[in-house]
Image: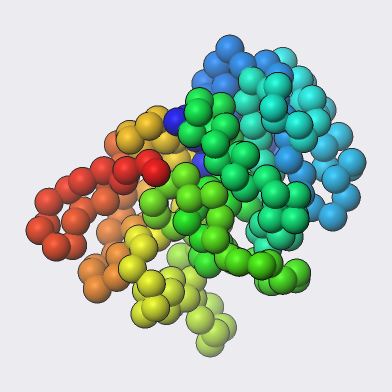
Length: 234
């Protein structure tokens, strides 16, 4: 199983997908025909056209949303609830899961990365539509919080920080959460997980101290025995 899970398509100081281009080129390798799923957006045609033009600069051809004959699959960002609802309605969660586990190269950005988690409970998006379930693809055994933001010590805002909300998640759930800052990505090669980019990621576990994880091989320490064990792809 080969996944590239990008935190965000846009990063300050870069154009659309510019910061991720080296990651995408390396990840797709010889794959040239890319299926793109635009369901996290409202205007599928405009979104697909935008991605088609951008990937063409990498000599990649977007062939639409039919992944059955594609070399690779890319799911873009937008609203995670809308993406999941549409995949549910079109009965695509099972087929996508089967094809990716069977070897179809996968890349996602933002919502397209969160959808690979067991559930979408750690997305930042508003539930603008109602899904039949929050269960997602379950390709990875941990949760992602993309666009992770650190608390601003100079802010006068008194609402919850992102860290507060993820700790609240662990009041009800056991699953570890990786806070992916913008500009970062996770690469999954079967059982090996690697953090890409120049920033650290933030690892949240129920009942344990939060850990900063440096770029490179990514491991989740076991809370029970103190030893390190890599996340296992499902």
